[in-house]
Length: 103
Image (tube, rainbow, N blue to C red; front, side, top):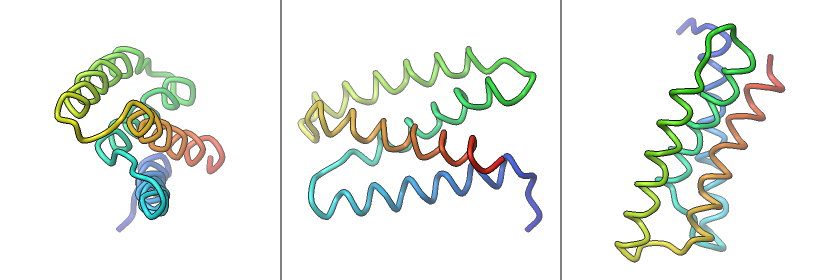
């Protein structure tokens, strides 16, 4: 399939974040839900600097949804704060690194 470079890099970042989260899960539990929403936040954050369009509203909405999602995972007793922050960070950093360094 022929994808544009930014879309291809977003897909690559998602694959990398899933791989990193899976590897971390062998030793320590990490939130896959927060990895996914962190990746989306990383995409919007990075595209705000790379493209002439402004993605700040999408970024802020994604961070708000991440807070709601993280709170739900805490109330559910599924994860600790550290596991949630680690998941968000892995997703965000994988997308950021992939988009910044592959273009």
